Image 1 (tube, rainbow, N blue to C red):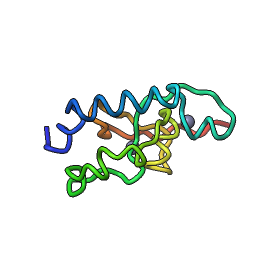
Image 2: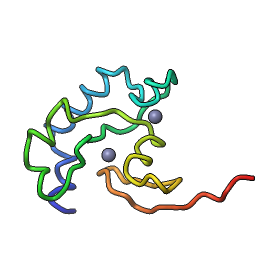
Image 3: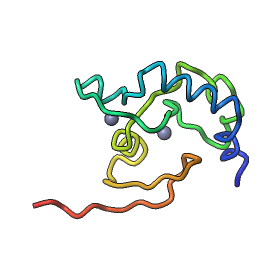
Amino acid sequence: MSERQKFYKTSNWEKLSKAYAKSVNYLCERCAKKGILKTGYIVHHKEHLTDSNYTDPNISLNWDNLEYLCMECHNQEHTGKYDKVVWDDNGNIVRVERKEKEI
Ligand SMILES: [Zn+2]
Ligand SMILES: [Zn+2]
């Protein structure tokens, strides 16, 4: 596990992310803006965490840099073009699958 992955296991992050999800009533913020009430599943960093910025609490632990998202919105944010992305518990992409085009 990389140092950055360990960040997601720290009690600071767990406390912050749980409190954040609760503050938005566990609803995906992007869907809510469209009037869709959908349960979110991950606290996303608006400024994406990288190996060089995860140690900066102004980014990694900044309430204003967080967004609670459902799987679809989160996938779209990180990959855009892909339909399905599988994440592990540390917020890393495990695999990316292209969904068959629906006719
Ligand atoms: Zn959503
Ligand atoms: Zn994210």
